[in-house]
Image 1 (tube, rainbow, N blue to C red):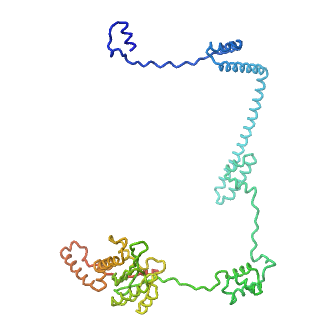
Image 2 (cartoon, helix red, strand yellow; image 1 turned 60 degrees about the vertical axis):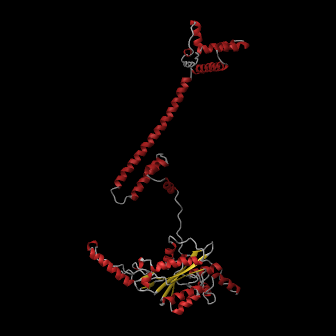
Image 3 (tube, rainbow, N blue to C red; image 1 turned 45 degrees about the vertical axis):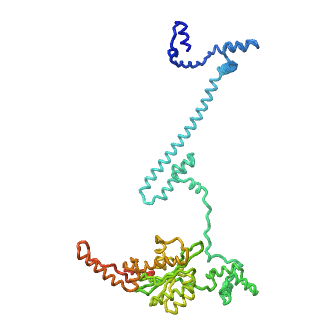
Length: 487
């Protein structure tokens, strides 16, 4: 706008408003200030003028020259320091060179002596180690070199220490540990070997052999044989008899090997591992009780199940609201009666119902052998436990049952399917009922006819003539392992 106005005034012509705005020009940045430099003569002159100026005109000198009071203070201190330095140099000009030269000579002489001593010590150490190296090479040709080598290194170590070599350096050169060096300087005191027991003199207050035998006889007497040593000691004391101190009585009993348990205790033999064999149905039954979750917390239903370990058939099962020994006895009695054949062994764990008196009495009356799992052994009743897992891992097994009737309804369907429909791999892919009631042979014959027809139609598809799966001849609970015979 300024340039447009001035253009109008100079020419007198109207200029359009758009042409009146010139392009914006960025001015150059200001030049950096140059630091002032003052010569020595200028500084001395200004300091002299400042000091000679009257009291009220000193500031005028600073304003005229564009200076600060700090400049005058700094320059005055520099001038005074230079004067003192020149005065000192003038005083030393006469004898300073001689004093400095003498001190330097003394320092160099001391350094030369120190280096000469170090050189002499190094030469001596090299000479000693060279001789030791030659001796070691000569000894290396012999067979037993341990003792001579140690002797050579000891002589070398002593020579180095005599030459003034430090202990650390001498140990490093000779390969000796400093701890070993100091241990040799101050060896541990020699310990006397202990006196054998047979050569020791008995204390004057010790009991004689006859007295010790009397104490041992008291400990082994009829009334004291089952008592602890403390009991024997105090009872003898109450009877007015003092034989020895309590600790002495313990020492006498310990020498005779009688400080262990002195009382007669009952022994409990280890539980026998059950080994049960069945080669036909209705020989060995296994039974157990499992819990089924009820409608609310703390409510459980109890499922009693019998299983034949050979046929995998369930001769009986019930669901009850409680576990009761009388109920278990009736359950077993009814199952055996319905089966028509009495098994020779019934196996169970050690639950309260399994070991109860009613169940035991029933099995004794029927002439059935009772078998129980070992305590804290989880695999002594495998058939019942496996069937419980099969049932509880079904996809439609409910999380809980609303009533005991619902639990019975579910179990009725499960056991009907398990006994009559399910083909079990452990019994040749037959149903448990087929094996239990003796129809498995007819089923195998029918399977053989089908397989023979298939083989006759396409014999090239078979590596050998197909046969139906065979039923195992034996079924075991804890089958014994064959003993290895030494060949």
